[in-house]
Image (cartoon, rainbow, N blue to C red; front, side, top):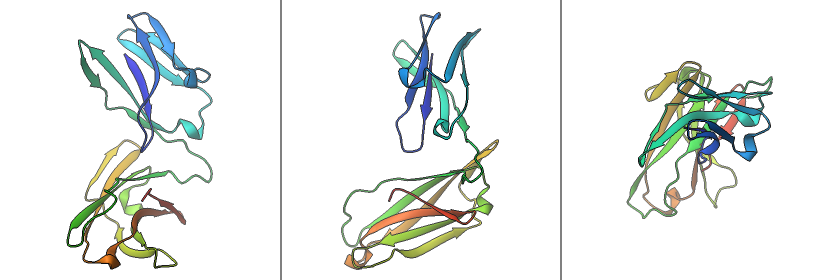
Amino acid sequence: MIWYKQQFGELPQEVGKIIADRDIKTSPKFISRFNLEKIMNGISLTIVRIQKSDEGLYFCGVSTWGKSEFSTGTFIAVKGDEDVKVSVFQSSVSDSVPAGASVTLQCSVLSESRAAELQVLWFRAAPSQSHPQIIYTHHNSSLQCESESSTHTCVYNLSKNIFSLNDTGTYYCAVVLCGKIIFGNG
């Protein structure tokens, strides 16, 4: 059994594991504040002196006879006085799209706030422009949202027809919350 930590846009990192149902091994990066303890049917994970960098999805995995199974996991959001509790992840698109093609951009927003409290914007930054241009906004939209206890995940799509060179550029999604703007990775 293995504990993993995953942050948006990153590969899962192994926190620690139990070997042969008795020996617990914690990965070096996590050894100082992450405690693993054998319990009846597996291992429990305790994080001491939690920090902002501990934020992420934690889940277990088991491999037996070449078959792997994973738990659904728990997202840990670390609160702070001035922290905006939102993560924005934008799926990437191939480097170039031919004229006449259609492309759908996807933006995933993980937040402690409900979708009704978020405003999602789409920007286009083009070499010929000095400032990014707002091209679309989602406001009070929760059409594609899932909620699990204190966290909410919403997926926002933007379908765009590429008619000419005027439509080229880098497209970004961004979230407006509490007077701050959090951008996706473009």
